[in-house]
Length: 345
Image 1: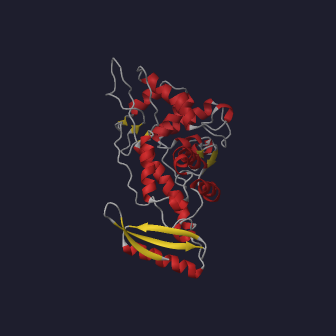
Image 2 (image 1 turned 90 degrees about the horizontal axis):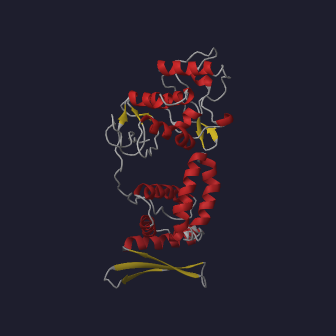
Image 3 (image 1 turned 60 degrees about the horizontal axis):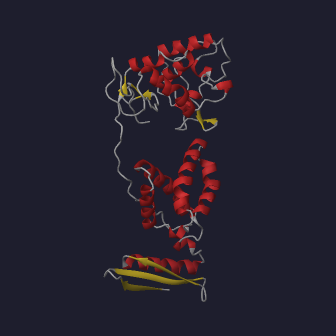
């Protein structure tokens, strides 16, 4: 066990720490450092670990592959602490961008250099800056558990700079007149849902989880405030995204519309979901966007083709807003471009 100074072919100085794992006859190990102090600290840590009987993995990293650790992370942490919807979105990134590139690497080999090479490989394979940054964030969270569980001595993703990017689409707020034009082409139930999203500021998962007693009292009269206590995540109903309920003011026009809808469908039970899908099943955002929202945009502002992917809601200043591709100013007599602009969600 010792520290040796060497000089690379390029003339740079390096310090190497060598030691034997498991005593005489054991496997020879080495680590290279850019400065003497780090090498000396490593040497002291290895000696201390041997004296105290600690596992070598606590100092030099685990022999476990990243793929194996990802399975363990999923079982011990992901399935326990993450919401189903979050876990589903993580799984797509892990399966497509993490495991194919890093799965066979040993945990001990996950260095800052390896992370930088992986990020570059993702970009060469077509991943955009938002995708790379999201993958880095997910990997950093996974490796945070690896540090806590003593599989690696430090998190190599911590401090890794994220890739700067500029939005390809502009952000614009919509007026209530825009939303009313969209609602005019929808059936009553879907028009009421757009009102909830646009004027009450609910997330789609929160709106789809609303039950009649969240908007109406025991007599079927509108409440003063809307009770937002649940949200759909994946195929389940759970607490809202922030983990807490809230009670936004139920605006009079929206309250009146909900009361009229309640009477129109012959006073359903107050415990039933307001915006249930086919045969009473839970509605899902992606399905609703494709079947209802995007066709409504095309009907409100015909354009060849209309490819809006909108998510409706309220902007920070209170104007109705939605998400979709960038567009020219709102058409008048001769629409030739999409009429809906995006907003961040």
